[in-house]
Image 1: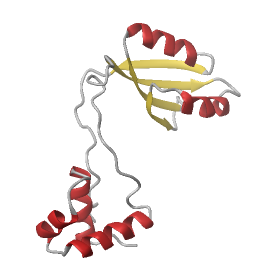
Image 2 (image 1 turned 180 degrees about the vertical axis):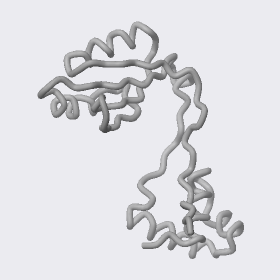
Image 3 (image 1 turned 180 degrees about the horizontal axis):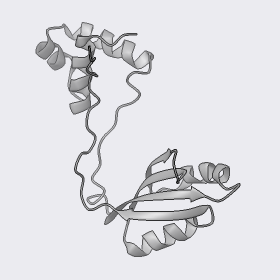
Length: 150
């Protein structure tokens, strides 16, 4: 399915506020609520819209630290790690990547002691590099229609 301009407008609205009503979106882009609903349903069915969710403040949820941890897995430890990482409640996002490291994780932690214990769990799988997040410069930026160069 090609994502047309109207679908991009719907996607932009939903990325800003997934709870915005179809009626409100329709008023803004010139469609009826049933037309918006039909387009959204089709995009969900095709996997363009994967899920809806809420953004939670890690600080207000009781965590003091957010960190980015890169892991270079030891020989034979990548597969076991890929199974284990799904069980860590600290892990918010985890990506398998190319380059010197195999894994990048975004984690939230209660404090430095929690970070130390978490790293102790990781080091059996590989070499870790940890970066404490000081602030978000860009967060949850919406995916926009790509510009086609001519």
